[in-house]
Length: 127
Image (cartoon, rainbow, N blue to C red; front, side, top):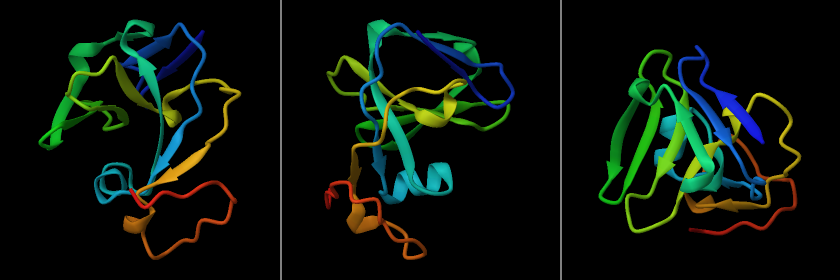
């Protein structure tokens, strides 16, 4: 089981399943949401339990995507595709303890900021 929370602790999550390897997304929206690129993992909705859901504020960042953050402290928490999927993506920085998973892929590298290089040798997708 994996537990996590926002910065102020008002929103807490529990994941009752192994965490899939996360992606590092370099798209403009993830960069603006997180202040850099966003590393997140896709969690099956039935394995994700959220306490303090009333403190989660949702922002629809595109036609098919909304992003969840703590309304009190502003922590980036969720990426929700709003289409017929059975998963929600959870920001890796939310987890309180070591996760024992490693980033496996960079996505939307065509939109990455010009102030850093990707040098870890992981696969890089333009989209």
